[in-house]
Length: 313
Image (cartoon, rainbow, N blue to C red; front, side):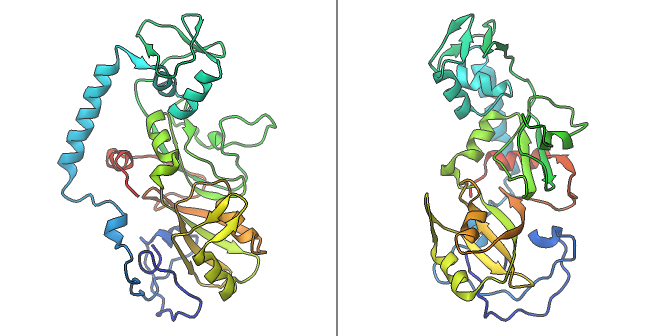
């Protein structure tokens, strides 16, 4: 992502003369991005094409798979698992729906059901804590460039601003964010009512790739740079980054990571005595901020949705 796949760029590396290049991941910063000298990948490193899914020449295969998924949706319409029914209602992901069922918060035709796999029929009445649910027919996929100062949730009891306030005119209800960004973190956030996709992208086993632009309160030392490469021990285990590189200043870094642990990027640097002054997510699951200003959103196109559904990190 920065200067070569799976390669860590050290503080002593010589950068080539910068050139303006608009379609790099970090090209979505407020200033023109600069392209640096490429560094040969280390032995055994994966090539970029092994990490990012190829799309050229595969449109027909994706179209066939999509048609198969639509056929499957028709087949299960008669009887749908309860957790899937809840997810398709736009309340939450399938995994979260399963937990709600187990917690005794869901009733079918007035009867308490504790089995997430219970088959729901089209004429069944399903309620979640007394609220009647109805699956949505069309899925919505929105990409938001979140500004600082907004909470990643649908509603906030404390009355703070939420990301949903930025989606005026989206023409969709019962949508929810995929994952979270801290209030003080900006950048890409996917918002949808597709419970199945949310479950896939949120599950740790899928290792969704994320790229961040990090600004620290002071320059990152060479020793700490190397320590991050080796892995930093945190209270919930070792934090591993896939790639890290200095940017224009030694207190600005590009960081690629798969881990979805809470506040993982901030905690890495805080454990080494740094304050993260700015944190911006530049890429998420292959989606970038290109042509998407801060605070704005757009619908994903059909090709992007297909790639997300078949995304392999």
